[in-house]
Length: 279
Image (tube, rainbow, N blue to C red; front, top):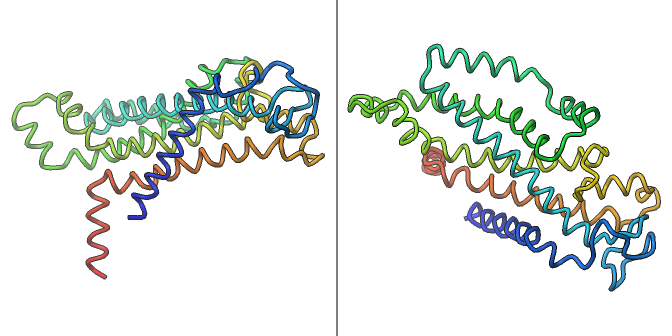
């Protein structure tokens, strides 16, 4: 019962964020990159969260910033989940030389530290949003592939796989018809937690001043707070709105990941039932 309530709460909160991101252009009263008031205005009916040291409306920046933050997280999660699931399924099910080549390549690539590489790319190459998401997704897919591979190795010894092979079905047919649906619950949960991770990572890069200055996001707002002395002056209207927005978004994804894992996995449901029956 608690997990069902957690799922509904997480889904409702995430849908609210998505709706705000889609309607941000209509909801925002001003262009977030244009000067719409005097510098450092306090919250008022004209500027709900006030303005920053450039005179830009903070409420408009918060609304428009949700787009880049959500896009950063979900695109990175899509790349890492899709690539990692594909590699994991091929490696675990085909085995042999294919498994050795893929696993060896993953072992080498996993030695590359993710955050330092992103910092170097951001400092020296100034890549765009898509390239950063691609690099993050590529590096994140390595761990995803190892997890999916371990799951597929256990599924490969199940009776339904032997029965499918006995019927003469090809390996690709078995992988796409039977293996992929079996690993889908794990893939979905990893996607949600991956989106949460990449959103926070993108905000962190922007906070360090390594994001795209032409794209408004919550990390850029916090960077302006830090560089403009907002933290030292205690200007809560500068930094609390993006902080609470990030906490709420991260919390919604955590609730969904927590609630979906046993709900989508029959094995976990059976283990839970057995645990209560033993009590």
